[in-house]
Length: 394
Image (cartoon, rainbow, N blue to C red; front, side, top):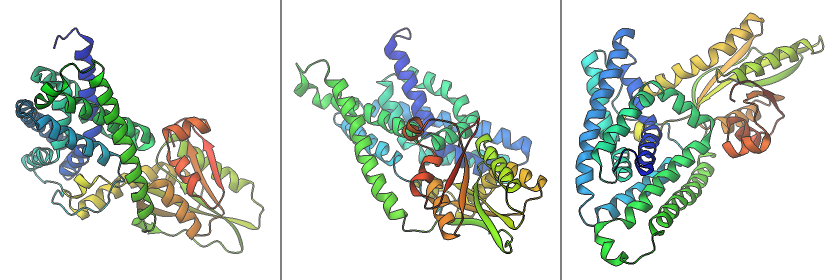
């Protein structure tokens, strides 16, 4: 494939998108593997671990490219890729039972990252091999461009997917697109497709993308209904001091963003406007999303709980600092689950008078299209929700 052709750069962009979408799980494992190392060694562990993992992945993709030339293996790969795309849309799981706990030596962390990547990268290997259309040079180029994004931008990418669920949907559709194209280009089907219209590969790709999104969304909706019957997993809880007499009980959702800090300031302003005989009771809530089933099956339960708790502590720190500076007492509640649903259910269970949370300032229609924790909370809430516009995301 000519480096100057549009097809080359489209394939590069597809490979980069695949690495970003399917690299989030690996980013969690990398963080867990290096979390017990000193700061200087932690950076070395991440760097060399990722270098080794990427090198191993290139080798695996090279062999995958050769195998895809065998009759019917593209068909099998396409079917696997369709399922991988569907699985990307399914609700994340929060129960781990694996072995990654965090190495105490640099060599141990590097080994853990490489082994984990080898175990977890089947989806990435199949998807990249399909997008590369037989070009190992394209694979290497695409992955080299992806490395800085995956290594240094992984947390941003994870937050982006958390804030804008439509990104995950588009990623799943991309996998379906590649699967559809792979299916109709299998060498075993070539004799049967002689004389087929030139638009057939595009039609198959569109069909694959639609199939993944429709099936994935349907299964995800059913799974969410089932999960709604289960309680959220609590990381830590410290109830707010009981307010005597009359009180205004506010559940304050915090995630460390500028939007959530705007919600804290809203609560502080609310306190200044209360009647003297009305006390303010604040419950500060943070909800971490669970990890994917792949990570959960590879990571030790205690290590995963520590990882969620550390992320939650960081997210709550700015809100806690503002409340403490203003002399406002509060309770802290940390969970793993679907943020909007958990926040809404917690407020209902505690008979709160109001939920206060920030928003990134999108309009109603745009927010609903992109998806957000705010929209999810509004859908499930049974108490009033004060949505405070912020300059950041909600």
